[in-house]
Amino acid sequence: AHSNSVINHLNSKALNFKMGKDFDNGSSLVFNYQKYKLDYTRPDDGSFDTTRDDGKKDNDRISLNYSAHLSDRLSNQFTLFRYHDILHDNKNHADNLWNLNFVTSGFSDQITYKMDHQLITGGVDYYQYKIRNYYSTSSYELDGTEYISSESFQNKKTSNTAFYLQDIWNINSKWNLTPGIRFDHHSTFGDHTTPAVTLGYKQSGKTNYYISYKEFFVAPDLYQLYSTSYGNRDLKPQEGGTASMGASHQWNDSLYGTFSIYRQHAKNMIAYNSSTYRYYNTGKLDSYGWNAQLHKNVTDALSMFLGYTYTHVDRSASGANSNLNGFLPKGMLDVGIDYQHDKLSASVTGKGIFHREGAWGTNPVSQYKNYWVWDTVVNYQITPQAQLYVKLNNIFNQFYTETGTYSSYGEYWYSAPGRNYEAGVNFRF
Image 1 (cartoon, rainbow, N blue to C red):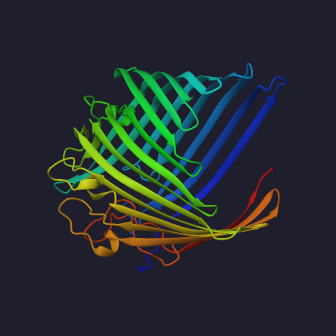
Image 2: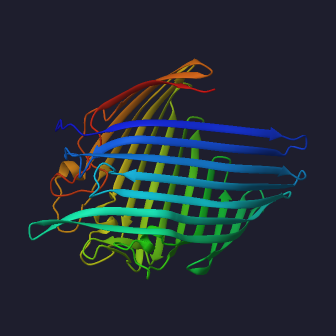
Image 3: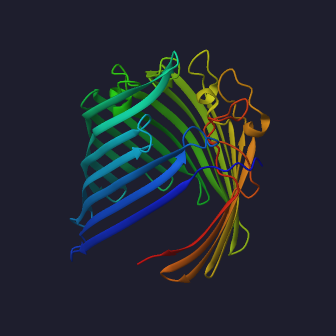
């Protein structure tokens, strides 16, 4: 272990308020309000930097949901929402601060109709994204003189209206078919239609198969478009399709598993160019991978799981490694043991990362390219309203980073926390 002290301080307050009304016909009305405030201190550039950066967050979430039970077959859900996020980062350094005031608002309306062998769902979603205010500064040195540049923009917004329809059709006791279609109208990028279809086959009560194809459409966000320093007004939306197939099987009452494989073709994927300091579209990008999971119930109280994921993403350019220039690992192995008996529960989990190449032109040290991280937690239910917990994270004090791999660690590394523990009580009122 490297035993480096990292500047880190958090002081947060959270409020959750929910009020609802149930009606005699099975309908309900629910109002929900959430408030989260955070004051924090972080290192300026990388985990080893001793310069303190102070920041604060002030977020709130408001929603109103009406669920209407119109008949035994027909139901409707209508939701209004508004999310407001305020960030003041590095506020103690006027030459390198970052302020953001962001609002997401909209509504959704969904109708569900049940038939003997079909479940039909349709609806409309509307989202508006608005940056009320963005302001940042940065300092740089030229010919021995320090300069400060700033960037700001206000009241930039986009919106998206989507209509969708899906039919879950149980053709018979073995076959099911789920077609769907979504139509998006984006205020900046116009109309896009994305279909989806899934075919399922139930061989027996223990074995199931499926095959599916789904298309997607993702518009650039406001910062990627309107940032005067890094944005690009010529960005195109990300589009593509994913084909997948999989199976699940239960060998006996205590052992079951799943397997899936996919291939994705995408175009106009958005990335950041560190040479031009601008967001850009990478062009076509293909990826594929597979996932396998096993779950074993050893006793009524003890269970174990094992899962492996393989991922390959083609290189986006000649001067880049695969898997988003080495950011994503080729392999990831998850293992764990869970214990649950009466008021006591506990778990031990491990995550193995394998073959994370790192950025083009680097030669990452093997211990950062492949590593294991182990965690454990113990919970005890004191009362129905109170739970005691103790966590020990990164048990073996593994030195690693989630932000990519380089030839060696340095000042710009944001390393993950070393061995740390947490204890407390959760109360529910």
